[in-house]
Length: 237
Image 1: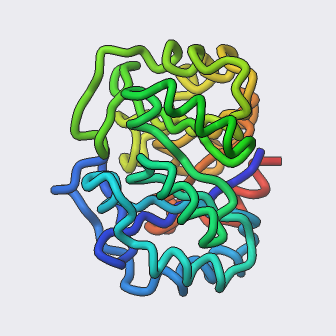
Image 2 (image 1 turned 90 degrees about the horizontal axis):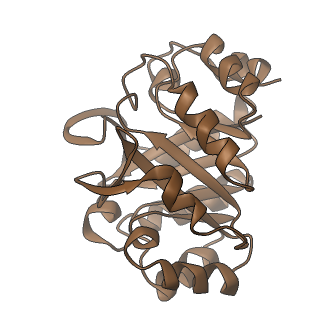
């Protein structure tokens, strides 16, 4: 199982939110490039980036620091947040990102997302953020009436790189992942599924690996030193 250390960007800084709430932000540093280098030095073979500002505005807001991270660490990076036009997709891929996580527009404009997946095969990730099993959008500020599994299934057969599935109730809470929901998503789709939200220790990582997750994004547990990256990598098998 792949481990993706997370770097959440807001105003050029490295932060973490609790349950996607912008009012519950923890500051973890003003040098995201140094943070990315740190994770690579600890064994990271890939890094997950989130443009929190972009998730709210609908366009990339931290592109300069994203470029700096990609150039500095030399491992595959993906990013989510504010990816809502073909021009943005091209801009981010040209910046050296390996793949891009699209969430809000996949729900609102599924035909556009299908077209983009075919235009950029294997480069787009379906980002599904769920609150009580229902898809949340716009930086988690709004919750739709669409079940997460239903959203994923409607794109069956498309050349999607993976699904990043985030359980908002557990995200940033260090209470353990929603393994049942992750397993349900894995069973529903043909693509790799990357779990996100709630990991607090190596046992949580091992539980996701046993549930046949293809990857796991870890944020707050690493930053608060509840879990170190080498231990997470070992638990992932």
